[in-house]
Length: 176
Image 1 (cartoon, one colour):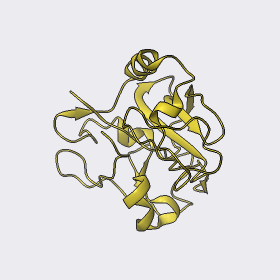
Image 2 (cartoon, one colour; image 1 turned 180 degrees about the horizontal axis):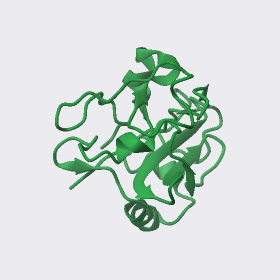
Image 3 (cartoon, rainbow, N blue to C red; image 1 turned 90 degrees about the vertical axis):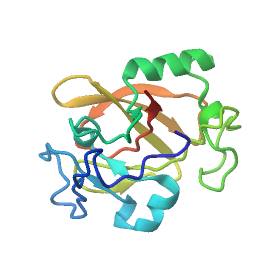
Image 4 (cartoon, helix red, strand yellow; image 1 turned 30 degrees about the horizontal axis):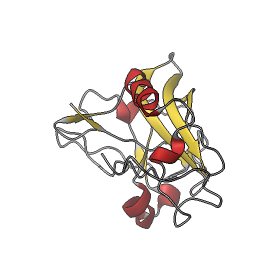
């Protein structure tokens, strides 16, 4: 997919809960949820929506039919194919219309058009739009954390790490 996911429904048509209230979006939330950055719909048009890991891994599927959320292994296959962990520029949208300056190495040669949608933390606070892109994988690291990929405006690296499942990150899908 060449954009961050924007869906508000699971594949079966069920609504994904939109948790706007910061006290409800917290470290104790253990069911699927999404939000728009700063609860402002206009951000979703460009950056997609932010989803917690529970929405990503709900059995009703967040990905449209014919698509799925990449596993950690699939992310690794992509980064290795493109040349290793210093390839974020091949994935990031070029220029500084959406990324902060200097947007190091960005040329978007793959057409992936990665955009920095920021995140929502486990206290319900919004952070880092324009600076950072966090993208969930469908792979659980442990009962508290899921694997994700990270890119930023000042680096050419794509970082693989784990983070608390209650955080709101962007999501990309790949074809089945």
